[in-house]
Length: 120
Image (cartoon, rainbow, N blue to C red; front, side, top):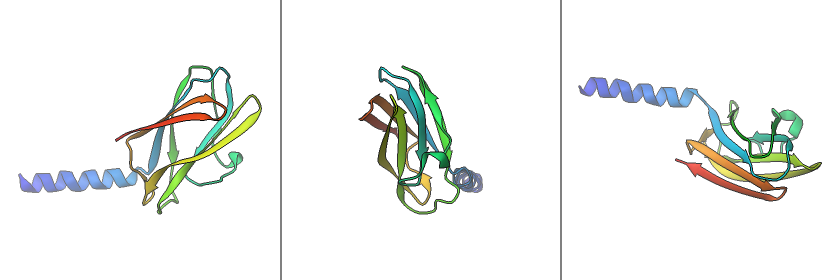
């Protein structure tokens, strides 16, 4: 029984380390369509370095980002464009290139108003 538990524990550690992705759920609660949105594990990153997503009003989108070269501690960046204006924010925390939370929920209410919550 102890051998089985050791094997399962070791397998779970390796499986969690191999999948180096950060998971987000983003909802647009603003009264405007979000033309462009990106999330990055690099601060002050350019929008053209990341996948761009669009969100309609009241739409929710689940996004996973790869963190392949991130083996340090840091924070995330989000950038989004509403009504032709780009908004940027740094938030959150990851350690050793891995997301601490199971899921980060981001709710966008306006061009300068975000609510960020985490599921552990």
